[in-house]
Length: 261
Length: 261
DNA sequence: TAAATTTTGTCAAGCGAATGTAAAAGATTG
DNA sequence: CAATCTTTTACATTCGCTTGACAAAATTTA
Image (cartoon, rainbow over all chains, first blue to last red; front, top):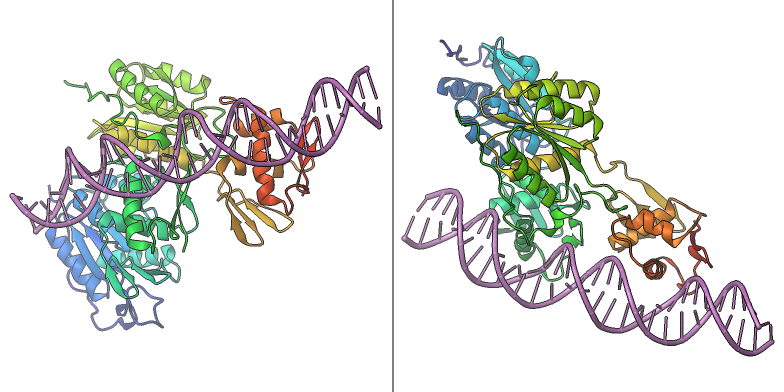
């Protein structure tokens, strides 16, 4: 059984295509690449990974990778890629499962699946799995690249979700996971940061503990709702001037918590 | 062949977790749970059914069950559950068939499948079967519970459209439960807000205390009618310019109260 | 009209549930 | 192993809802 694929070599037209080489995908002309578009490749064939990495990096993307499903899911959730290229057939966890779980936790993160011809393609882009596009192996790198760009264009119209949020004298950088108060770094654990990030991206909205658990913790390990409260305490200790009189993360008695910028 | 699964025991945190225990799934603020959310469990293992029943009932759901496919399909169609948990492997009729027929007749009824790992998961959530989610055995009850809640939340979004009522210089947002007077937020407890919302949606109408209790308090906990009066006091303190001379919520002696925009 | 009766306004406990918080226990990482 | 992060547990505290009491107002009755 030959699972080996035609491993893509370097691009054929190294010099030619200047316009694309710049930042990540297009539409970033004014501000010079503050943040490059980050692609996560989840694929168990090292040669395939290497080939894709070459090509994507050549095109100006930042590339991170994982070699099996569980690792891929983890990186997707912790390293904030802008798009995931996901092989269907992989050890440890099927790409289908990864895709589904990913879409449950980060619905907006675009996913492109790599499937073998004859695999059940309709399922892949089906409703629940929610992949944004797919490419059947063996594929040309050009095709994959084109689809990646198309999906990115479609998914994030001109400007994508902000990388740096600001409120009061805080600066929260979802790219490198740094939080600064008046320029000075404040340390957050990963859960704390994830929770904070979710609050920030839903300002003014009252978020129930259940919803926070869904969004930040996911479904597999679903802790006690009081766990949320504990983390709130920690956030407040780091964010609030006076943690006993919160002004940033408010409690809505009987409902949950609310972030107010 | 060991089809036995880890049968879920009672919840670990009997006392602690209050917020989740309440009625069905969340988002019932206005009229407190008149009807509990009903879950149908279709599963042939009695021990599994018992375990799940325990847990779901503990969380405030109503549980009905069926022990094979045909019975499950019948109950699903006749007993109006809000969600179905459906085992794939069952006597008489496969869960896949049940799901398919169910979705044909009640497309909006959410279904979560219980599958063994390695079963054709992609089929399950695929287009034609149309299950809303799945959990692979052996699963933790917490995960199933989390997915149930998530599906219910997803299926019945808490009326996404922000409905804003205005009167005088007030602005009442039933989406995020905010009340503003001239732009400034005024805090309302959940009961107070529910009561206000009911008044607002029945302007000019004289509402008896009994009717208010029915609508706002629901039938389960039916307090003294004087409780209404107390809440009226609170509303007036927050709404009226001069609470002793109400102009927004008027008393109709012998009948009840009346909201005048 | 005055008195009697009913209805409503209002307030201050009391109670149970929700939350704040610290510390123990468990899990993870290096 | 220690060090750190996460989750659970336990207890204190706060909060909102309800109730009962009494005063004030409205209505009815005499």
